[in-house]
Image (cartoon, rainbow, N blue to C red; front, side, top):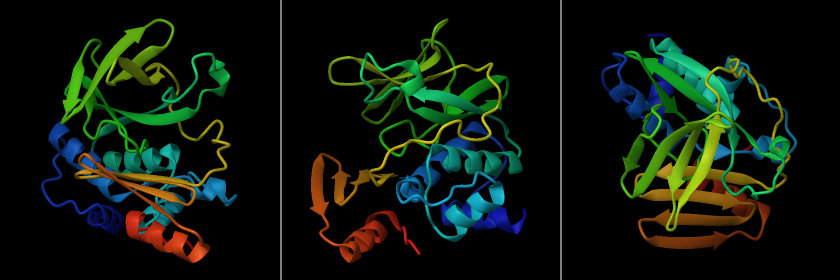
Length: 247
């Protein structure tokens, strides 16, 4: 095992057997989601972004930053391949919080991973940040996938391809959709034009989110909101809740 893999595993605090298995995939995915945040700060602050593995490794593993879905899943797919998994990167359309009449070309792009093991494919995704599966989801039409209080299901049709739904209080809501016969997703065809500064990370008991100067801490059934009023306080909160330090 080379030193970069050791650094990656140390950052996500993983110890255990590295023999490829769905159990290992789930362990790595969960540890990743609890340690490395989703964040769009380079886009919002108009910094440059690179999808080259050395640059992603430097940013996320060495500098302890997060990234958008493309950055996070590209680097995670590299780790999985280095450990012997068969992985395909896929573009998806991210439907959560999208108005019903939104043109398809305006639906945000997403990247996810399909991991192929023992004759079956699984969705593995470390690029959402908000509520989404923390474990691999078998790519089987009609399959329901439960994680604690969260319930998801997989469906498929000719128009949208594979669709991952999440259960809400009243109905099923489409999270994202994709086709499994598309070309490998190697870079973002269009980056989000979101100007707001966003960060999100899952925790063992909930999640932390940030929208500009407002931080929300979800722990079990409780919610704590914390607002910063100057740059110094914002940077301190960014480090406290997401372990991110900006140069």
